[in-house]
Amino acid sequence: MSARVSQGRRVAGVDEAGRGPLAGPVVVAAVILDPRRRIGGIADSKLLSEMQREELAPRIRACALAWSVVVVDTGEIERLNILGATLAGMVRSLHALSLVPELALIDGNRLPRELPCAARAIVDGDATEPAIGAASILAKTERDRIMRAFDETHPGYGFARHKGYSTPEHLAALERLGPCAIHRRDFAPVRRLISPELF
Image 1 (cartoon, rainbow, N blue to C red):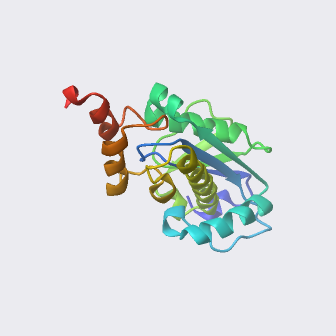
Image 2 (tube, rainbow, N blue to C red):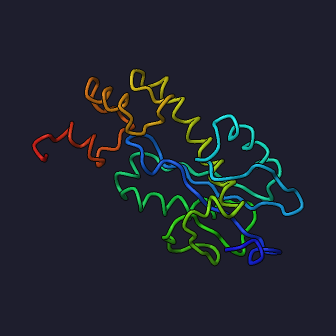
């Protein structure tokens, strides 16, 4: 969707961080940008450095018309599966906004049900739609903060560095220490340690 389509409408961008890791929550953010307060540098959070994201996040929160961040924990991911948990977080993030959007632009190719407004799914929307890019930055910086905190409560896994992704360091720690409370037991590398007979 181009900026021309969303011009003049109260548009919320929605994106998540943390679908792929073996541990930790999925974090979903929704942002309604203020067209009168442009924020330079917004892009897909994966294309930005950690320092750039940390500088942009407070600017987004200060300048946006509305924003929300929702955390979906490991237990809910295991109950709903990762797709279901992500879609549930998207719905909650839109409901949590202080303003009701007219349109939600959601990164990806799937729309959740029971949204509070009209919506469109946009593949790679975090790279083309500023509101989705802003949401991706808020989701990523919040999830990184959470994973740094988990590094303190679950030492030895390196969560502050790899944020729960399946890096060689993380996989080696899993082999050495076994899964902890925030590991996603339905994800194959973790399940293999718990139930090796299934592999």
